[in-house]
Image 1 (cartoon, one colour):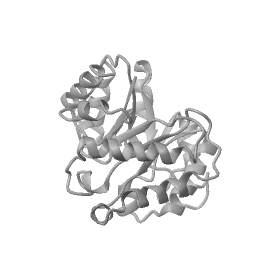
Image 2: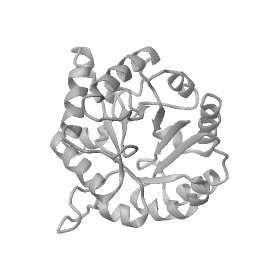
Image 3: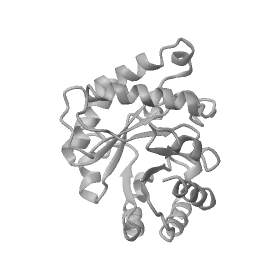
Length: 248
C-alpha cells in the first residue's frame, strides 16, 4: 500500500475540479490509498463524486474553534460534520504566507482530533534552515510543539515532510534528492518514537510528480506522497497513480 494525498490548493476553478473528479472517479487505484484536498467550495461535490471509488476527502485548512464570530473561517467540526475525514495542518503555505506559528498548529491539531478528523501534519525547513544545517532542529521543534502530550488513536495521523525550499510556489520548486529525503525521513521516524506510540505513516511532498514519485516511494522510510500541482490535471494524476501502483 502507498498513500497518494492530492492537495489541489487554489489551482482549479469549479469546472476544472468537476472534470478532474469525474475522471478520477473512473480510475483503478489498485493498492494506492488516496485522499484529495479540494478548495472549500468543492469539498461537498468531491464527497459525492468520489465516494464510489473509496477516495477520502479532506480539508486544506481548518479553524481551531468549533463555532463563533470568526468571519471567513471554517471549523474542523464543520468539515467533519460534512463528511470529510482528513485535514492538512501546518502546511508551509499556511505558516509562511499566512503567518501561522507552532502554537496555531498545535491548536489545529487538537481541534482536528476532537472533531474526529485525521490530521496530516506538515513539517519542513526553509532554505535558510537547510543552509545553516538546522533542518532537524526546525523539524523537531515543529513535531514536538504539535504532538507532545497528545493522545492520538492509531491510524489517526500522518506526517508529511515538505521542505519549504522544494515546494513550487513557496520555494524554488527543486525536489529534494531522494537520498536526502531518506535521511530526513529516517530522522523523523526516530523522533516520532518519543511522541507517538505507534508507527505513523510518513509522506514526502515538495515538487513531487509522475516522473520522480517512484524514486521517493522506493525509499524505506517513505510511505506515500503529498502532491500539489502535479495532482491537478487528469493525465498527470493518472500517471502518478499508475507509477505508484507499480511499486506499492
